[in-house]
Image 1: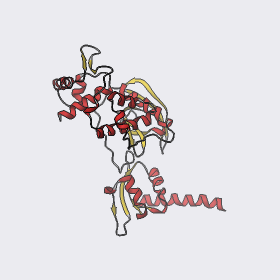
Image 2: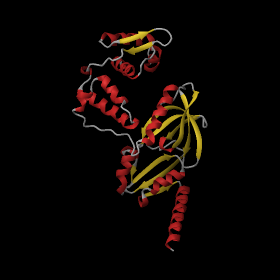
Image 3: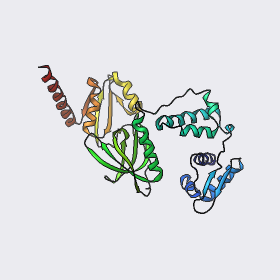
Image 4: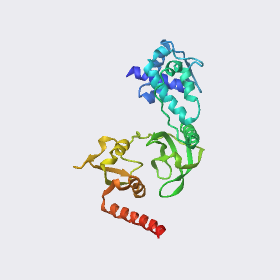
Length: 303
């Protein structure tokens, strides 16, 4: 809708110093002429838009301008404020608070700030610097390199970064892996020696990112697992009520995709006696062998 596009354009202009009309046209899937008409309409609404031609030109909002708070309702401003503060909780900066100052809404929402979203970890420094570096790499179209610790191996990786994602209570970067020649997602806490290189990349026509609750990472194996009804709260918390069935006793039957068997077994162990692999049979046998090895290890200590 037009009003949504106008708000979207205004939001972009508040966050970027300058942008060209063709970029806005591509983003909103309209013509450049439509964008220019939208910009004129925003200017007629009293917001000082500056346009410049030639190399280095573009569309911007006049420096120092603050939006009249009457453009947004108190409830809308409160929601925006909570979301922006959550980003500051990760970055360790006041960048988004400064954006709120530019919007001139902080005084209004501070009086009714009943929503707190803290996306930081116990060790805030564990990911804050990585997020800032990756964000800069995404904006500059630069390849990042790092050492990655996975359940299978430790290896040097490099990707074209496209998205920073907060999911499953952790931060990830999603992008095109130069080694696998496909899109992959990497957990920031497993990355070390992270660097933004001088090597630029041409943006790809990237697929839309989607979060599949039943895929912990890029799935490679599938399994059917029965969980005792006593842990239903945890399954609902992690996967949602719509993603599992129940047997006659109220126990949970869940079919999902996992990255690898080692990660699957580690997850199942976290439920102790409240989880049982139903199929495939080979996974049951391998998991039983793992349990026997654990018993043998503890039996040796007892003797």
